Image 1 (cartoon, rainbow, N blue to C red):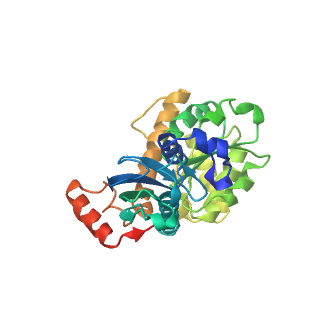
Image 2: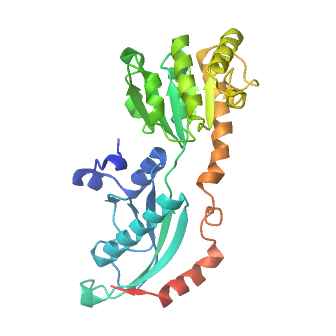
Image 3: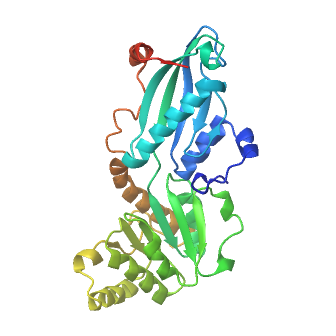
Length: 310
């Protein structure tokens, strides 16, 4: 598993990872990256049109030929990443480079590069409980473009294959309710532990923050009535209580088997996190579908006019 946030790269990993694997990996992890493509070449160049590489804040994968062309491309890509981290916006640019022999790139040709910057995914899902439903739910959540934290206080409940899910982090905690304060605002919380009191303690910590995007609680009608009363006695406002999804899951997906409940919950999660996407990609709609073919020639011409001599 790769973790760009932890800078856990080494030269061997970079050699093994090509641009296809890297882009797929970072998409799964929800981390920002830039896909660099040689869009067009003229004269002698290190690599041909269509050659690609991936650039992250801390490393790069594959190559567009090395030398000053690649050095400049990486520098430009990292500048795009810094902007993406501040704005959460995807972007696309075409830049033109002349390969001059005076700076060591003796090819003498020119290249137009397409930079496609993919902003980090900031959707966070927190699942409390590693019981039968939690174990059925995790493989579904792992297939979504989200970061998932799976919390429980029982080591033996976590399956041995958790590590195969690249966007899932296992969190073993003696006091799961104390972990709530560490998660970012607008997180989506799913509470389904093995203990009613623990469910209440976790839920109470979440509602106290009032900055959750979604809180789903697994409960019977009786359990929910009791929780509602206890929240009220602890002076949680009714407006906040009304934001709790309980019973959890879509009513259109009935069933009590773990997988049936998991599918119902996953459907509700997808329904809720979709409303976050416009906030995350605000301002990126004009570039979300790529550069139209009719625009390519004019963009290349504009890039050539401001060409960087290497």
